[in-house]
Image (cartoon, rainbow, N blue to C red; front, side):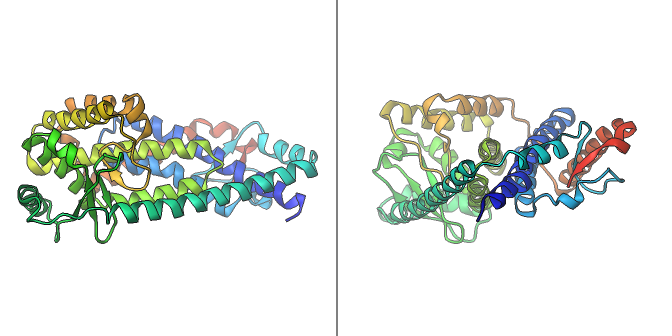
Length: 351
């Protein structure tokens, strides 16, 4: 690729991708606040929109031919009342530098190599972890009885394979999508009482029921594809945070338990990790505490505990309610266009 090609990639793909992620995250966050959307599954869905729009914009790019005076809009697009985009286009193309182009090309190659190595490393790490020390009914009968009852309560056809790990990655985690494996520390099981173990297992089985590993790997793939966009990393953290809340919600609902019981489990696991100075689980599986920040500062854990304590079973989500939320988001988007209608004959669209 020559210098012009790299400049066009940056101008027509990378920059629009970042701009769209910023615009849509602000739009989604405002809609969540205005419509008071509390259900974590709905919030997961809406937080995924700026990530998907950013990915689509990166792949599709911005066609110079479509930088035109605005016509009636039929899709989510960004308007540009100050003509920043045409100015950026012209100024960017007139300040080309071979050194800059070479630096961008080298940066992309290095980033690609790091991402490939990271994914290969995660694959072998989780592959080894899932085969570390498999246990059977004879080894832990009480654990298997509880797990069997919970699997039936969640409507799972098969209960997951159970593996005990003595590594410093002690957070419980579900590995795999088709044939999931529950990896858990025996020290953690001894730390918790029987009711806490039941809630802990219910949380992990909720991840299996919700197919969270499929979602997790999907958003991780998009995040790495958008490695140049710092907001993509932030959005993924928001989705993971809501995903954990959704698993808590499903576990409490399925067992018809008091949310305070889940609060005790989250608190106990977090303090267990703190006391033993254990490492957080590398990103790639769904676990009770997957975020680095939860291990170091506990900020997201405390926020999650606070949410559980104001838990309301009315936060249950139906398909019709999710569709309603999306319709409201669309209406909200059009309202801000109507407000800007007097300027539409002067606007450019980033297509």
